[in-house]
Length: 611
Image (tube, rainbow, N blue to C red; front, top):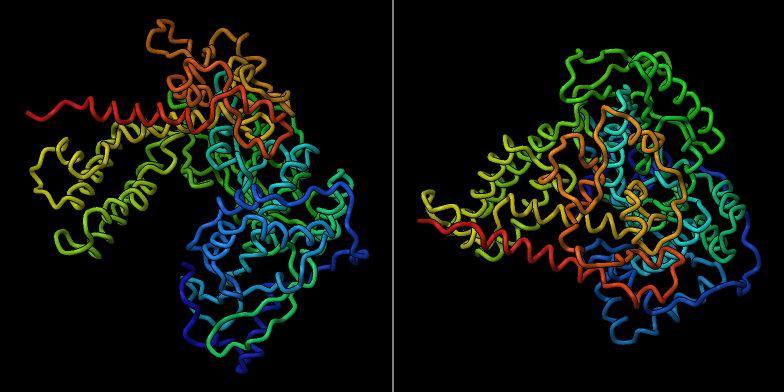
C-alpha cells in the first residue's frame, strides 16, 4: 500500500553507519518541540462517560482491513473478530485509559517507512526522503473513539470554524468548493468583481505546539479527561525508522501532532481556527492547511489591495501559534462571468516582495478552476487520467486471457469510475466532454466483455453490467443533494446556505453563523436571477430571471427521493446534541437513498432497445 522501503541504506553525505543515518533522518522529520505540561496524578476524572461497544463499532466502520499495520503487525481484521466474538472486551480494555486521561507508552510507538521522493536528482540529503508513519491499530481504535467525542464537544463549544474543512465528518472538499462557487456567483449577480487568493501553510502538523493547543482546549470548556488524554497522547512518543540495515530500537521524537493518527487532523483544525478572520464582504474557506481568501469590490484593483491587507492580517495572526505561510505556493485568480466581454484581468498581487499573477487555470482540493468556473478543464483532466489508467490495466489484463470478467467489473467500479467521475456530483460535464468520456466508458465495457468493436452500445452496457455514463452522473447528483439537505447546519458549511424552505424541515438548531452578505441583497436587485424554492424545477419557469444558485441546484436534485417526506433525517447525530426522540419520527437516511438507486435503474431500463 505504501510501497517498499529503499533496498539500500540512504546515502547521506558524511554519514555511513545505519544508526547515524537514522539519527540524521529523525532530526529534520521530527524537529524539537516544547514538551506538553507534566501529567497530573492518575485519578479517575469526573464527567466521564464509559466507552461503549457502539463507539468501538463506529470506529471499526471507519477502518479498512487492508490498512498497513504498525509495529505489532496486528491488522484491523483481528480486532474486528475479537469485537464480534466478545463486544465487551475492547471497551473494558480502552475504558480505564480514557477515564484516567492516560495513553500508554506502548501505544505511542510508531514505525517510520523511509521512501525516496520521486523526481529528486540525488538522495544525499534528508530532504530527498519522506517518512510514512504507521501506528498501532489498537491505539488508532482508541484515537477514533476520542475523535468522535472531541468533535462533538468542539462543535458544541465552537472550537471549529464553520468554514473549516478537512478530515471532519460532514465537511468534504466538495462542500468547500461549492461554497466558494456559490459565493462567487452570488456577488457576480450583484455585478461585483471577485478575486481569490489561495494560500498554503508551511509545516502543517509539525508546527502545532502542545501547550498552546491544550490551553485552547481548557479555555473553551472541553472535558478534563479529554484534555488530559490529549496531553498524554502527545508526549514521550517514539519512532523506529525502517530501511536496509536500520537499527531495531525505538528513538524518542518530538512531534506537533503525529502523522497518520485519526485525531491529528481534528487537533490541527482546532489549533488554526483563529486564522479565520471576519472580513466584510469576504470569504475564508480552509481545508486543513489550504486557505482560500475571497474578496469582492467594484474593481479588481481594489480586490488586489484587499487581498494584500487580508494576507497581512493573517500573517500577524500566525506567529503567536507558531504557524507561517508558504508564500511561493500562493496562487491568484480573478473570477469573471462566462458572458463577460471585458478582457481578463492581469493585475498581480504582491506578497513579501513577490508578484503573483492571476492564473487561467489552477487546481485546488482536486478541482480545476478557471476564472469563469467552466468545468471543461476539470473533466478534460479526468478524461486524460482515465484514459491512461485504462491503458495501464489493459496491458496488465489483455482481453480474453487476463482477469475474469467479474474482476474486471470490480476494477471498473473501484478504479476507473472514481477517476473519470471525480466531483461529477458537484459539476456536470458539458456535452463536448461527455461524448469523449462516454467513449472511454464503452471501451471499458468492451474490455470487460471482450465483445467486438461493432457491438451495439446499449447491448454492450447491459452485457458488461455498467450503466451508461450519463445515467451514473444522474445517480450521483441526487445522492450528493440528499447528503446536503440531510446534514445538520452545525456540521456542514454548505447546508447553512440552503434556503429556509429546506432548513425549516431539518430538526436542527439555528445556524451558528450568518449567511453571506450577498444573500440579503439578492432579492432586492432587479437585474440578477431570483432564487427559486429548492423543490421546484426551472423547466416550467418562463421567466429566465428565476434560477437556482449552485447549492440550491444541487439540493434540487434530491427533490424526487424526498418529495413525500415531511421531516428530513439528520446525519451525524453522534456529533450533535440532538435528542434521541428525533430518531423515532423521521425516516432513515439509508432508506431515502433507495429511490435514487431505483431512478438509476429506471433510467437505464428506459434506454431504447437496439433495432
